[in-house]
Length: 390
Ligand code: SF4
Image (cartoon, rainbow, N blue to C red):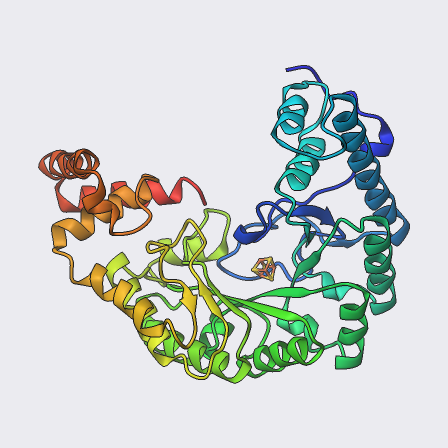
Protein backbone atom coordinates (compact mmCIF):
# COMPACT_ATOMS: atom_id res chain seq x y z
CA UNK A 1 0.00 0.00 0.00
CA UNK A 2 1.32 3.45 -0.93
CA UNK A 3 2.24 5.76 1.94
CA UNK A 4 -0.19 8.59 2.62
CA UNK A 5 0.94 11.92 1.15
CA UNK A 6 -1.80 14.02 2.65
CA UNK A 7 -1.33 17.74 3.06
CA UNK A 8 -0.66 19.00 6.55
CA UNK A 9 -4.01 20.79 6.74
CA UNK A 10 -5.77 17.40 6.62
CA UNK A 11 -4.00 15.98 9.65
CA UNK A 12 -5.74 15.63 12.99
CA UNK A 13 -5.30 13.47 16.06
CA UNK A 14 -7.41 10.50 17.16
CA UNK A 15 -7.20 8.39 20.32
CA UNK A 16 -7.40 4.61 20.73
CA UNK A 17 -10.98 3.91 21.81
CA UNK A 18 -14.62 4.93 21.64
CA UNK A 19 -17.84 3.43 23.03
CA UNK A 20 -19.31 0.65 20.83
CA UNK A 21 -22.32 2.76 19.90
CA UNK A 22 -20.05 5.50 18.52
CA UNK A 23 -18.72 3.30 15.70
CA UNK A 24 -20.06 5.64 12.99
CA UNK A 25 -19.14 8.84 14.87
CA UNK A 26 -16.49 11.35 13.95
CA UNK A 27 -13.67 10.89 16.51
CA UNK A 28 -11.80 13.94 17.72
CA UNK A 29 -9.21 13.85 20.48
CA UNK A 30 -9.28 16.76 22.90
CA UNK A 31 -7.29 15.26 25.80
CA UNK A 32 -4.75 12.44 25.66
CA UNK A 33 -5.10 9.22 27.67
CA UNK A 34 -6.49 9.01 31.22
CA UNK A 35 -5.66 11.35 34.12
CA UNK A 36 -6.48 8.61 36.65
CA UNK A 37 -5.19 5.47 34.98
CA UNK A 38 -5.42 3.31 38.10
CA UNK A 39 -8.52 1.16 37.62
CA UNK A 40 -7.45 -2.44 38.21
CA UNK A 41 -9.38 -3.93 35.29
CA UNK A 42 -8.31 -1.37 32.68
CA UNK A 43 -5.28 -1.54 30.43
CA UNK A 44 -6.28 0.96 27.75
CA UNK A 45 -3.99 3.82 28.75
CA UNK A 46 -1.47 1.99 30.92
CA UNK A 47 2.09 3.18 30.23
CA UNK A 48 0.69 6.29 28.54
CA UNK A 49 0.82 9.70 30.13
CA UNK A 50 -2.21 11.97 30.39
CA UNK A 51 -2.02 15.42 28.83
CA UNK A 52 -4.38 18.26 28.11
CA UNK A 53 -4.24 19.43 24.51
CA UNK A 54 -3.77 23.04 23.62
CA UNK A 55 -7.04 24.75 22.61
CA UNK A 56 -5.50 26.20 19.41
CA UNK A 57 -4.13 22.78 18.47
CA UNK A 58 -7.61 21.25 18.86
CA UNK A 59 -9.09 24.04 16.74
CA UNK A 60 -6.48 23.18 14.12
CA UNK A 61 -7.77 19.59 14.16
CA UNK A 62 -11.36 20.78 13.74
CA UNK A 63 -10.25 22.92 10.76
CA UNK A 64 -8.56 19.82 9.32
CA UNK A 65 -11.84 17.88 9.48
CA UNK A 66 -13.58 20.85 7.81
CA UNK A 67 -10.98 20.78 5.01
CA UNK A 68 -11.44 17.03 4.53
CA UNK A 69 -15.24 17.36 4.45
CA UNK A 70 -14.92 20.10 1.82
CA UNK A 71 -12.52 17.97 -0.22
CA UNK A 72 -14.88 14.99 -0.09
CA UNK A 73 -17.79 17.18 -1.21
CA UNK A 74 -15.64 18.52 -4.08
CA UNK A 75 -14.81 14.93 -5.09
CA UNK A 76 -18.51 14.15 -5.04
CA UNK A 77 -19.18 17.11 -7.37
CA UNK A 78 -16.38 16.05 -9.68
CA UNK A 79 -17.75 12.52 -10.15
CA UNK A 80 -21.31 13.69 -10.64
CA UNK A 81 -22.79 12.93 -7.21
CA UNK A 82 -23.71 16.58 -6.63
CA UNK A 83 -21.89 16.98 -3.31
CA UNK A 84 -23.66 14.08 -1.60
CA UNK A 85 -21.62 11.28 -0.04
CA UNK A 86 -23.28 8.16 -1.39
CA UNK A 87 -21.91 4.66 -2.07
CA UNK A 88 -20.26 5.74 -5.34
CA UNK A 89 -18.34 8.53 -3.58
CA UNK A 90 -17.42 6.28 -0.65
CA UNK A 91 -16.14 3.57 -3.03
CA UNK A 92 -14.17 6.11 -5.03
CA UNK A 93 -12.46 7.35 -1.86
CA UNK A 94 -11.79 3.89 -0.47
CA UNK A 95 -10.02 2.84 -3.65
CA UNK A 96 -7.50 5.66 -3.35
CA UNK A 97 -4.32 4.46 -1.69
CA UNK A 98 -2.94 7.96 -1.18
CA UNK A 99 -5.59 8.80 1.43
CA UNK A 100 -5.18 7.99 5.12
CA UNK A 101 -7.48 5.89 7.28
CA UNK A 102 -8.37 9.12 9.11
CA UNK A 103 -9.55 10.75 5.87
CA UNK A 104 -11.55 7.64 4.99
CA UNK A 105 -13.18 7.64 8.43
CA UNK A 106 -14.47 11.14 7.74
CA UNK A 107 -15.92 9.83 4.48
CA UNK A 108 -17.59 6.95 6.37
CA UNK A 109 -18.94 9.45 8.87
CA UNK A 110 -20.51 11.53 6.06
CA UNK A 111 -21.73 8.39 4.27
CA UNK A 112 -23.68 7.15 7.29
CA UNK A 113 -24.89 10.70 7.81
CA UNK A 114 -25.65 10.30 11.52
CA UNK A 115 -23.73 13.49 12.32
CA UNK A 116 -22.48 12.22 15.70
CA UNK A 117 -19.12 13.34 17.06
CA UNK A 118 -17.32 11.62 19.94
CA UNK A 119 -14.65 13.53 21.82
CA UNK A 120 -11.73 11.38 23.00
CA UNK A 121 -10.03 10.33 25.37
CA UNK A 122 -11.05 9.14 28.84
CA UNK A 123 -12.06 12.20 30.84
CA UNK A 124 -12.68 15.40 28.92
CA UNK A 125 -14.65 17.24 31.60
CA UNK A 126 -11.31 17.61 33.34
CA UNK A 127 -10.61 20.51 30.97
CA UNK A 128 -11.21 24.03 32.22
CA UNK A 129 -14.83 24.93 31.59
CA UNK A 130 -13.89 28.01 29.53
CA UNK A 131 -11.60 25.97 27.28
CA UNK A 132 -14.20 23.26 26.75
CA UNK A 133 -16.87 25.84 25.96
CA UNK A 134 -14.53 27.50 23.45
CA UNK A 135 -13.78 24.18 21.74
CA UNK A 136 -17.41 23.09 21.60
CA UNK A 137 -18.53 26.46 20.25
CA UNK A 138 -15.84 26.36 17.56
CA UNK A 139 -16.68 22.75 16.72
CA UNK A 140 -20.37 23.48 16.26
CA UNK A 141 -19.68 26.61 14.17
CA UNK A 142 -17.05 24.98 11.97
CA UNK A 143 -18.84 21.68 11.41
CA UNK A 144 -22.59 22.37 11.29
CA UNK A 145 -22.95 18.81 9.91
CA UNK A 146 -22.58 17.65 13.53
CA UNK A 147 -25.89 16.81 15.15
CA UNK A 148 -24.70 15.32 18.45
CA UNK A 149 -21.53 15.59 20.55
CA UNK A 150 -20.67 13.06 23.24
CA UNK A 151 -17.69 12.30 25.46
CA UNK A 152 -16.37 10.10 28.25
CA UNK A 153 -15.84 11.46 31.75
CA UNK A 154 -15.18 10.18 35.26
CA UNK A 155 -17.70 10.71 38.06
CA UNK A 156 -14.91 12.02 40.27
CA UNK A 157 -14.23 14.74 37.72
CA UNK A 158 -17.90 15.58 37.17
CA UNK A 159 -18.47 16.27 40.88
CA UNK A 160 -15.78 18.94 40.68
CA UNK A 161 -17.90 20.86 38.17
CA UNK A 162 -20.90 22.91 39.29
CA UNK A 163 -24.24 22.39 37.60
CA UNK A 164 -23.83 25.93 36.19
CA UNK A 165 -20.52 24.97 34.58
CA UNK A 166 -22.01 21.76 33.19
CA UNK A 167 -24.97 23.75 31.85
CA UNK A 168 -22.60 26.11 30.03
CA UNK A 169 -20.86 23.09 28.54
CA UNK A 170 -24.19 21.65 27.43
CA UNK A 171 -25.27 24.98 25.91
CA UNK A 172 -21.98 25.14 24.01
CA UNK A 173 -22.83 21.83 22.38
CA UNK A 174 -22.07 18.74 24.51
CA UNK A 175 -25.15 16.49 24.40
CA UNK A 176 -24.16 13.32 26.19
CA UNK A 177 -21.66 12.07 28.75
CA UNK A 178 -20.62 8.42 28.97
CA UNK A 179 -19.51 7.53 32.50
CA UNK A 180 -17.78 4.31 33.47
CA UNK A 181 -19.61 3.65 36.71
CA UNK A 182 -18.66 -0.05 36.64
CA UNK A 183 -20.12 -0.69 40.11
CA UNK A 184 -22.09 1.08 42.81
CA UNK A 185 -20.70 -1.12 45.61
CA UNK A 186 -18.21 0.84 47.72
CA UNK A 187 -15.91 -2.04 48.84
CA UNK A 188 -15.61 -3.07 45.20
CA UNK A 189 -14.96 0.51 44.08
CA UNK A 190 -12.14 0.57 46.62
CA UNK A 191 -10.79 -2.81 45.53
CA UNK A 192 -10.67 -1.86 41.84
CA UNK A 193 -9.23 1.59 42.68
CA UNK A 194 -11.90 3.49 40.82
CA UNK A 195 -11.10 6.55 42.91
CA UNK A 196 -14.73 7.42 43.56
CA UNK A 197 -17.52 6.46 45.98
CA UNK A 198 -21.01 5.25 45.11
CA UNK A 199 -22.38 8.50 46.54
CA UNK A 200 -20.14 10.51 44.20
CA UNK A 201 -21.27 8.37 41.27
CA UNK A 202 -24.87 9.23 42.12
CA UNK A 203 -24.03 12.91 42.58
CA UNK A 204 -22.16 13.03 39.24
CA UNK A 205 -24.96 11.32 37.33
CA UNK A 206 -27.56 13.67 38.76
CA UNK A 207 -25.44 16.75 37.95
CA UNK A 208 -25.10 15.69 34.31
CA UNK A 209 -28.85 15.20 34.05
CA UNK A 210 -29.69 18.45 35.86
CA UNK A 211 -27.45 20.28 33.39
CA UNK A 212 -29.68 18.92 30.62
CA UNK A 213 -27.28 16.42 29.11
CA UNK A 214 -27.98 12.80 28.33
CA UNK A 215 -26.27 10.34 30.60
CA UNK A 216 -24.92 6.93 29.66
CA UNK A 217 -23.67 4.78 32.54
CA UNK A 218 -21.40 1.80 31.89
CA UNK A 219 -21.77 -1.15 34.25
CA UNK A 220 -19.32 -4.04 34.38
CA UNK A 221 -20.92 -7.43 35.11
CA UNK A 222 -18.40 -9.85 36.58
CA UNK A 223 -16.31 -7.14 38.24
CA UNK A 224 -17.14 -8.43 41.73
CA UNK A 225 -15.81 -11.87 40.81
CA UNK A 226 -17.10 -14.84 42.77
CA UNK A 227 -16.62 -13.09 46.10
CA UNK A 228 -18.71 -9.93 45.62
CA UNK A 229 -21.06 -10.67 42.72
CA UNK A 230 -24.30 -10.34 44.70
CA UNK A 231 -23.44 -7.05 46.40
CA UNK A 232 -22.06 -5.73 43.10
CA UNK A 233 -25.31 -6.53 41.26
CA UNK A 234 -27.65 -5.18 43.94
CA UNK A 235 -25.74 -2.05 44.98
CA UNK A 236 -25.02 -1.03 41.39
CA UNK A 237 -28.71 -1.30 40.53
CA UNK A 238 -29.61 0.70 43.65
CA UNK A 239 -27.17 3.50 42.72
CA UNK A 240 -28.60 3.60 39.21
CA UNK A 241 -32.14 3.70 40.63
CA UNK A 242 -31.16 6.97 42.33
CA UNK A 243 -29.78 8.42 39.10
CA UNK A 244 -32.28 7.15 36.51
CA UNK A 245 -29.82 7.57 33.60
CA UNK A 246 -30.88 7.73 29.96
CA UNK A 247 -28.77 4.68 29.10
CA UNK A 248 -27.31 1.77 31.02
CA UNK A 249 -24.71 -0.09 29.02
CA UNK A 250 -23.29 -3.47 30.00
CA UNK A 251 -19.66 -4.33 29.32
CA UNK A 252 -18.73 -7.65 30.92
CA UNK A 253 -15.36 -8.03 32.61
CA UNK A 254 -12.46 -9.57 30.73
CA UNK A 255 -8.97 -9.03 32.05
CA UNK A 256 -6.19 -7.91 29.71
CA UNK A 257 -2.63 -8.92 30.60
CA UNK A 258 -1.56 -5.33 31.24
CA UNK A 259 -4.36 -4.71 33.74
CA UNK A 260 -3.34 -4.94 37.44
CA UNK A 261 -6.28 -7.28 38.04
CA UNK A 262 -4.56 -9.87 35.84
CA UNK A 263 -1.86 -10.36 38.48
CA UNK A 264 -4.50 -10.53 41.23
CA UNK A 265 -6.26 -13.27 39.34
CA UNK A 266 -3.04 -15.15 38.70
CA UNK A 267 -2.19 -14.98 42.41
CA UNK A 268 -5.62 -16.43 43.21
CA UNK A 269 -6.87 -13.27 44.92
CA UNK A 270 -9.56 -12.67 42.31
CA UNK A 271 -11.79 -15.38 40.85
CA UNK A 272 -13.74 -14.70 37.67
CA UNK A 273 -17.44 -15.46 37.47
CA UNK A 274 -18.10 -18.45 35.18
CA UNK A 275 -20.37 -17.48 32.26
CA UNK A 276 -23.58 -19.00 33.62
CA UNK A 277 -23.10 -17.36 37.02
CA UNK A 278 -22.40 -14.10 35.27
CA UNK A 279 -25.76 -14.35 33.53
CA UNK A 280 -27.43 -15.01 36.91
CA UNK A 281 -25.64 -11.93 38.24
CA UNK A 282 -26.99 -9.82 35.36
CA UNK A 283 -30.45 -11.19 36.12
CA UNK A 284 -30.21 -10.08 39.73
CA UNK A 285 -28.96 -6.66 38.62
CA UNK A 286 -31.85 -6.13 36.21
CA UNK A 287 -34.38 -7.47 38.71
CA UNK A 288 -33.18 -4.84 41.21
CA UNK A 289 -33.51 -1.91 38.79
CA UNK A 290 -36.54 0.19 39.71
CA UNK A 291 -37.84 3.56 38.60
CA UNK A 292 -35.52 3.67 35.57
CA UNK A 293 -36.94 5.31 32.46
CA UNK A 294 -33.99 4.82 30.14
CA UNK A 295 -32.68 2.14 27.82
CA UNK A 296 -30.48 -0.79 28.68
CA UNK A 297 -28.02 -1.99 26.07
CA UNK A 298 -25.70 -4.97 25.82
CA UNK A 299 -23.79 -3.70 22.79
CA UNK A 300 -20.28 -4.75 23.78
CA UNK A 301 -18.79 -7.81 22.09
CA UNK A 302 -17.59 -9.09 25.50
CA UNK A 303 -21.20 -9.68 26.54
CA UNK A 304 -22.62 -13.15 26.14
CA UNK A 305 -26.22 -12.10 25.44
CA UNK A 306 -26.65 -9.14 23.10
CA UNK A 307 -30.41 -9.07 23.36
CA UNK A 308 -30.39 -8.13 27.03
CA UNK A 309 -31.61 -4.78 25.77
CA UNK A 310 -34.72 -2.67 25.68
CA UNK A 311 -36.47 0.25 27.25
CA UNK A 312 -37.18 0.31 30.96
CA UNK A 313 -39.53 -0.18 32.66
CA UNK A 314 -41.74 -1.65 29.92
CA UNK A 315 -39.23 -4.20 28.58
CA UNK A 316 -38.01 -5.48 31.95
CA UNK A 317 -39.95 -8.75 31.76
CA UNK A 318 -38.87 -9.30 28.16
CA UNK A 319 -35.22 -8.78 29.13
CA UNK A 320 -35.52 -11.14 32.11
CA UNK A 321 -37.17 -13.61 29.70
CA UNK A 322 -34.12 -13.50 27.40
CA UNK A 323 -31.94 -14.39 30.38
CA UNK A 324 -34.25 -17.15 31.56
CA UNK A 325 -34.39 -18.64 28.07
CA UNK A 326 -30.61 -18.91 28.15
CA UNK A 327 -30.53 -20.38 31.67
CA UNK A 328 -33.23 -22.88 30.73
CA UNK A 329 -31.19 -24.31 27.86
CA UNK A 330 -29.62 -27.70 28.44
CA UNK A 331 -26.02 -27.61 29.64
CA UNK A 332 -24.91 -28.85 26.22
CA UNK A 333 -26.76 -26.09 24.37
CA UNK A 334 -25.48 -23.43 26.76
CA UNK A 335 -21.95 -24.57 25.99
CA UNK A 336 -22.61 -24.68 22.23
CA UNK A 337 -24.04 -21.16 22.40
CA UNK A 338 -21.07 -19.89 24.42
CA UNK A 339 -18.58 -21.36 21.95
CA UNK A 340 -20.54 -20.02 18.96
CA UNK A 341 -20.77 -16.61 20.56
CA UNK A 342 -17.10 -16.44 21.44
CA UNK A 343 -16.21 -17.63 17.94
CA UNK A 344 -18.12 -14.62 16.63
CA UNK A 345 -21.01 -16.54 15.05
CA UNK A 346 -23.92 -16.33 17.50
CA UNK A 347 -25.58 -13.15 18.68
CA UNK A 348 -28.67 -14.61 20.34
CA UNK A 349 -29.77 -18.05 21.50
CA UNK A 350 -32.17 -18.04 18.55
CA UNK A 351 -29.06 -18.66 16.43
CA UNK A 352 -28.90 -22.17 17.94
CA UNK A 353 -31.92 -23.22 15.89
CA UNK A 354 -31.51 -20.92 12.88
CA UNK A 355 -28.75 -22.88 11.19
CA UNK A 356 -28.51 -26.62 12.03
CA UNK A 357 -25.18 -26.95 10.17
CA UNK A 358 -23.61 -24.27 12.34
CA UNK A 359 -25.10 -25.79 15.50
CA UNK A 360 -23.63 -29.18 14.56
CA UNK A 361 -20.27 -27.64 13.75
CA UNK A 362 -19.93 -26.22 17.26
CA UNK A 363 -21.38 -29.36 18.87
CA UNK A 364 -18.81 -31.56 17.12
CA UNK A 365 -16.02 -29.13 17.99
CA UNK A 366 -16.96 -29.41 21.67
CA UNK A 367 -17.13 -33.20 21.48
CA UNK A 368 -13.72 -33.36 19.88
CA UNK A 369 -12.11 -31.07 22.45
CA UNK A 370 -13.88 -32.86 25.33
CA UNK A 371 -12.52 -36.19 24.12
CA UNK A 372 -8.96 -34.92 23.95
CA UNK A 373 -8.81 -32.42 26.81
CA UNK A 374 -11.92 -32.89 28.90
CA UNK A 375 -14.48 -30.25 29.88
CA UNK A 376 -11.74 -28.03 31.27
CA UNK A 377 -10.26 -27.97 27.78
CA UNK A 378 -13.55 -26.69 26.36
CA UNK A 379 -13.69 -23.97 28.99
CA UNK A 380 -10.11 -22.98 28.17
CA UNK A 381 -10.95 -22.82 24.47
CA UNK A 382 -13.97 -20.57 25.10
CA UNK A 383 -11.92 -18.27 27.35
CA UNK A 384 -9.09 -18.10 24.81
CA UNK A 385 -11.49 -17.17 22.03
CA UNK A 386 -12.94 -14.24 23.95
CA UNK A 387 -9.64 -13.10 25.45
CA UNK A 388 -7.95 -12.83 22.05
CA UNK A 389 -9.77 -9.48 21.72
CA UNK A 390 -8.89 -7.90 25.07
S1 SF4 B 1 -10.95 6.00 34.46
FE1 SF4 B 1 -11.51 4.79 32.63
S2 SF4 B 1 -9.76 4.94 31.25
FE2 SF4 B 1 -9.08 5.64 33.27
S3 SF4 B 1 -8.16 3.83 34.22
FE3 SF4 B 1 -10.30 3.92 34.86
S4 SF4 B 1 -11.44 2.69 33.35
FE4 SF4 B 1 -9.41 3.14 32.46
